[in-house]
Image (cartoon, rainbow, N blue to C red; front, top):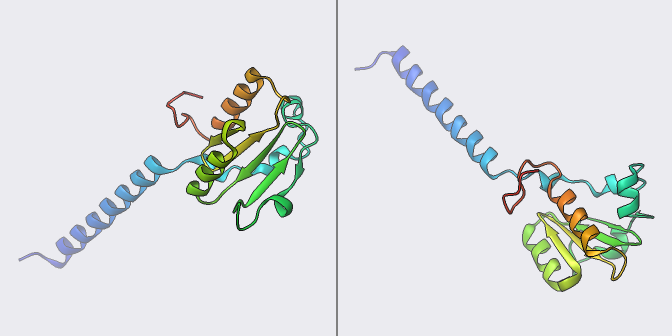
Length: 142
């Protein structure tokens, strides 16, 4: 027969164990790109961002709707970025935009034809992939 103190110790150990497993699962599955706010691109003072996304402006109200359920949209002279709450919606949008798009987590980038070179598109994609993460989906260290 266990004492009351022993039962409390076992219960406390179980709670700590469950909490530890929850933290490990969270850290293993969390992707910081889910939290990227596209507002950082609007009115950016950084020269690199200005060159990649010139004249960036909010376009959420005109571009996001039931057919394209994005929560944020930013449009510029070179590309448009769409942010989704549901990754499946992001994947569907990237497929819909086909060859002119890039998927990074919950964000889809739709490149304007002829505005950025292939090297610039790649540079932009790598920069986006590395925001808020240490390793990209492809396993590239940032």
